[in-house]
Length: 149
Image 1 (cartoon, rainbow, N blue to C red):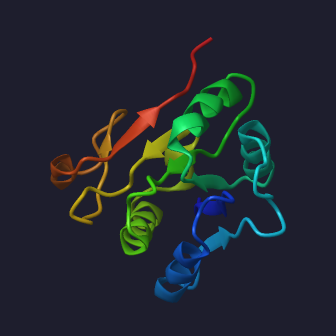
Image 2: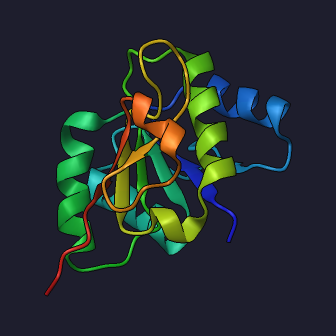
């Protein structure tokens, strides 16, 4: 299944614009009109989950904690956390890579932190399963967060 993205209010709108320029078929919903600035993380997670969208957020400090709590009670398509130190171009490349290499099922109940390394190359190193041998040189990890009851 194709990944559908939902931008958090803290994501630069130029990331979405750049993604759509590079790949017009990407389903990346902007925060404007859906997620107001200052909306609490649990509500942001619910908005994205209710629309079956992977949340793209720059809020590394609190979103990962709230995501852990959220998936304790609900299903989530996942969260992509992009550090504010990443350039817009690096964020676009990372999101394109994720869209091409993973499907929605691969992100469900997981958070991905920092989809790019410092040199702007894309790649993932999975904590759950090996995805491809060449990905081991990269710094990014998929962090499995499914809670076993």
